[in-house]
Amino acid sequence: MPPAYLLGPDGHPWHSWRVLLLPYIEQDRLFKAYRFDEPWNGPNNSRLADQMPKTFAFSGAHRVGLTTTNYLAVVGAETLWPGAAPRKKREIKDGTDTTILIVENNGLGIHWMEPRDLKFTTMDFGFDSLNGVSSWYVSPSVVTADTSVRTLSRMMTPESLRAALTVAGSETITDGADGWTVIPDGRDRERKEP
Image 1 (cartoon, rainbow, N blue to C red):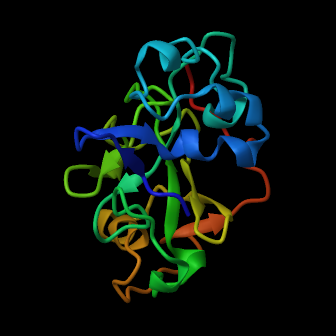
Image 2: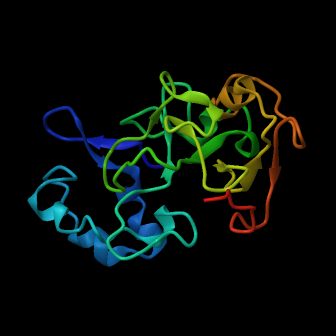
């Protein structure tokens, strides 16, 4: 797994995990055009800003010029994304099938190249919050560390969501109405009314 961000020489986050994933989502050309010797919003990288891959937007939401991502990491010492250091797979004690890797977010307005995501210490653990898990679908989804897409039950408690975001809390999370359910295709969910 990549780190949540890479630090620049000034000690601040300069590059997002989304940029680091580009070669793995068939975006080699974009990755090679990106410059790591300047921040994400530097002069060269700013010219790439409107080339966000479809992968980083809700299905059907991508359009030419879109720059806002709908997929965020949750960064924190207890999560899969501790910060500038990558998490090793062996550190996931709670199981890859019950540990959240990526969450949906609708409305926070994070640029796809920006090294900013949700912070575990300050995020909202309820649903439909700009500073938490939110979606344009009735039931939001997440991706777990085993790469399964899971829809979250509207009955999932903030405590269960918090537990699913930690790598070694020893919590028990179950499938079904009180937790989450694996779904074969995240695009086949009921959309909210506009």
